[in-house]
Image (cartoon, rainbow, N blue to C red):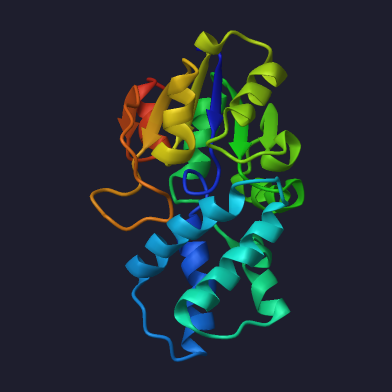
Length: 227
């Protein structure tokens, strides 16, 4: 294996906490009572629906997601509030295991990002990941959103190695593991759910080659000790 590609949000960056951190106060201002699990499950329905069809920037997708919440939960939303979820990405943080795990893996492998994001939004997160990536492919560059195979094919074209030399690492079975497997790309499922039923990504049946709980656990499995 020569390359490791990573989904970013949900795998490296704690996007569910970022999503809830924005939605909770928005809904509290409306005195809207709904559990975190219900919010995440609704998000897992709204986002893929808004990403379907003709490509739009992720900022626009997230604005539409906020309006979906407003319609579903019967409240009004301002332009600033609709655009606020994308702006909140600036404050989304990596999981505690992410940076150290990436550093260890980068000592042996080339690292890539394959993310459903805009270039400028990823730049905010890239600074927090602290590891230089050898290739970055965003939805903006591919003009499509995973689980579209186009995103994975764009990555393979960029890194210019046989797919047998690539291992894709991700939390989402729906967005990442299933489509990567369909192309013959080996996969690692970073199971951030740990038995929880609610999640911001759809759950589908898929068969990853390896399952780990954290990025550091992946480095352990690869036999790479702490630096």
